[in-house]
Length: 286
Image (tube, rainbow, N blue to C red):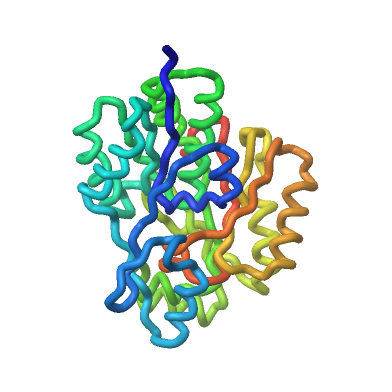
């Protein structure tokens, strides 16, 4: 009897309902704490509600990892028919989510928890790659091993319109925010070695900045896997996003261009008008 494998993730992978259905991925929502309420990301609250709450109160919601028992219940439900699970977690450098999931998985012989060392569709890319391997008939253990080996190749970055959310969340200093505002800088945030780092700092009109950013990220396109690319945003202008997708299409390179909206986790930390292009390189990123 062949092994049945479930690909699963927490909601921070920012995969759209259409992609989740297409790749048959099981997801569990991260908790979002808004005032005295604990809400489920993507179920009880969405990113627009995060922005509305901040506009009214000046407060940012907090995101909270599921506890060990909640992960245990999730894994128990997925494995009740004997299926194996390959689970993708928000990177350990960003949250205790990974640690809680791994502790819960110790009670199961057939649950493999992956520290994506990434966030948003950077993690989502790995989950979809696992889905590809499942289609090829690989066992869960080998899928987990191959996906883990690919983690250093994930190229994840975002351009942020304003540092306000990062500042209020304690991820940048007041001096950095003041300097960025005075110089009208739009920083590119890159995920490297499981942490967020500041890359290039763009200047100018935000729409022009994003077009320049996309072209620069695709500059060395021969080193990028052709399978798929994500264009992920947090509340950006719809027409601008269409223009950016057309730029990506103009390369006539990718087999699949996936467009997604970031959920509450990214939106709570980076704010509206954050946009990223994410893909997997053929070689590890230095």
